[in-house]
Image (cartoon, rainbow, N blue to C red; front, side, top):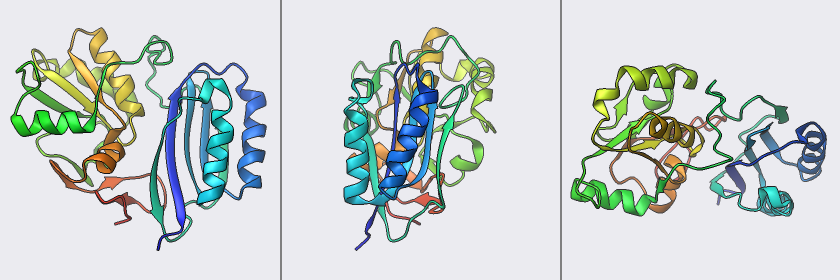
Length: 242
């Protein structure tokens, strides 16, 4: 049985003390024997960590004891071996770079659709209002090549900073439809949905991203695997390494 618990989590929340928080979180994670990456920015936190179950859960519980991180929800998967080589805690300008300072998810989230509801929309061919549903993959092209939703739009971007310009160039694909933006864990598609809504597109984000879809729905409407940023390389819809 796989014994290493892998978690990914993010939360857009104001962090004004990230310089002092960094060594605290690093010391906590190191003491628990965890490896992976924690990113801290003024706009929030993004983390990918792995270790034994008790240690991972203890770290998350400690993090949520801070009111700023109380809503943090983690997506879980298991592996036989530690997928990270070391522990890194980094300070970033953004926890996912978009180069659009006006996009501030910590102030107001975009609407989200739960995996079960999106599956129902896809099964019936429209949303609950009868509108056409368009799936928009906000990930980089090489990630999409590992797998994506059947029929999803892929603009072949090489980095997320290209997304706003791509959205402008391909606006006609989205107008008049319910656009569901999706990504690995939810962070990129959250910013993407906010940007699209600010430009007049009716966009929502897939709650929990692809990993959340795998957890709650499995492989329905999905083809291939999901690239992850660790040594496992990709996960199947069963949340197991390829």
